[in-house]
Every structure is written in structure tokens, then in C-alpha cells.
Length: 112
Image (cartoon, rainbow, N blue to C red; front, side, top):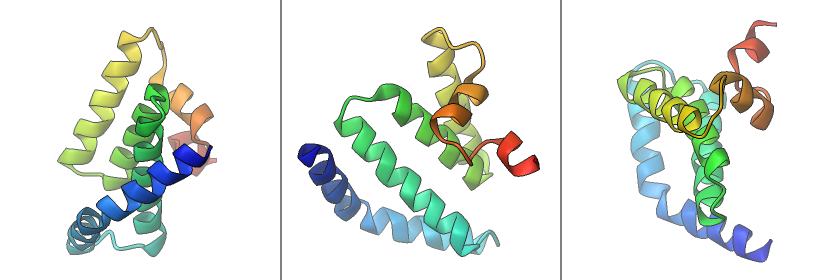
């Protein structure tokens, strides 16, 4: 557990400049909701921690959720890549599995 926390802290430090660029880019597109920006940052940190712990399914679930929040061409590419990886692993419904792993980030969670 300590190694996972350490990896998360190191990842957070390394992402600082990238996070600032991302926040600036999201704000320029008009999607500057503080909640969205916080969620994107949290998903990136979780993705890095999962990567450090070799938790590939969670890595791709985080990328998928982050891609949906970005809602641009780069975001769509993240979703498509995550879905493709999950399908390669035998997952029949990547969106549903991602909803189980990351409750609150799926379309069903937001629509009711």
C-alpha cells in the first residue's frame, strides 16, 4: 500500500505541468467546470497509480472515463483505445464494466 501511495505522489508531482496545460485547454474550450477539472486530474492520478501497480484493467477504465470527460477528439481516442483493449481481454461490454469499476462516471449514472 505504501508503494502505491508513493507512486501516486510521484505521479502527481510529475503531472503538475501536464495538468496545468490540460486545465488551460479545457477552459479554452469552455468546459471549465471545476468539478470536471478535478475529476480529470483525479482520474489521471488514479491511472498513474494503477499503472504503477500493474492494474491494467483500472488503467484503461480511468482512461475511458477521462476520455469521456474531455469530450474532444483526444478524449474519443482514449475511449476507443480503452474499449479496444477491454474487448481484446474478452470484455463484451466495456462501458458496463467501466461503470462497475468507476461508479459515477458512466452515462447511465448521469442520466438516471
